[in-house]
Image (cartoon, rainbow, N blue to C red; front, side, top):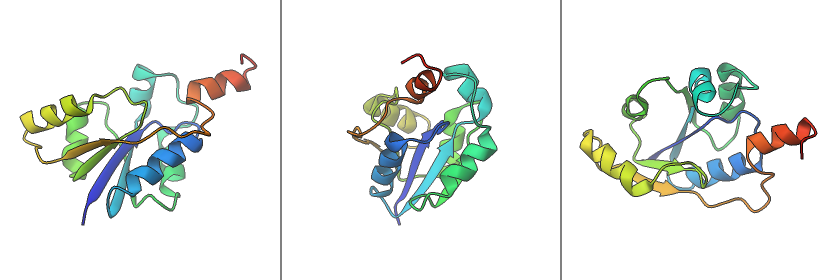
Length: 139
């Protein structure tokens, strides 16, 4: 059985998220999604619109998702160890270099995990920040 790990904020669920998770699910037999904790969202992106527990519940209700884990604010590799994936699926716009991530996984004793990037969703409304701006009347 091939376990795939996908991760993200999933603050305002949109077609880009759905496409990413469908592609991630197609990479294996089981999909575990790591939903970023509120502290991480604040630190890296914006004030979360939806609290982490609610985002996890929404993502967990999607048929392609087998399990949801709320990420920790510390070292992301602790979460990788916890999930123990065979594949890490990156979203097309996630700021990770796949080769560098594979190298760092190996350096931390997590070698053998394949890193794959999902393709872009053609009908995507754009990033969550653009959706929020549109709602506010800024676009």
